[in-house]
Image 1 (tube, rainbow, N blue to C red):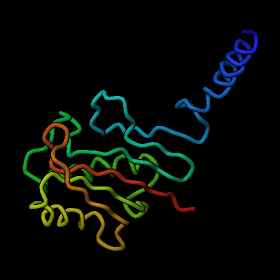
Image 2 (cartoon, one colour; image 1 turned 90 degrees about the horizontal axis):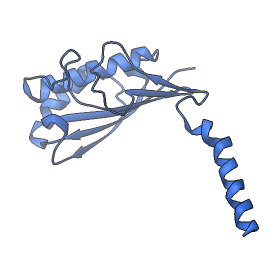
Image 3 (spheres, helix red, strand yellow; image 1 turned 180 degrees about the vertical axis):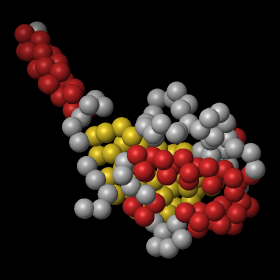
Length: 154
């Protein structure tokens, strides 16, 4: 019994000592939350800057003022998504030239050409690596969601 009690105490104390490492206050980890950004009140951060790397949460084409998906189809949604992402990048001192990879989730591949038309406006040359995944549905009826990773130049 004493052996189990000591083991429990050792695990408990270790947990207390390592807990700060697992919290949002970890040194070198900063939440990026731009002022001009759709605040959904959901438990996620638009971006996390860890060292020189910015991890951007998946974003839909939400109007920052209303948090609703913008009307106008895939082109309008893609443009608004990228505009919102630009706010996160800028808040972290970056821009689209610093993006190294993109994961795109698209509901209907019939929209793929229209999506790419707008995407090219934001990445006109030397675009980042990208994966595009077809999905059955997105939150609030969105047609496209983009998630990115960017790296600050040294």
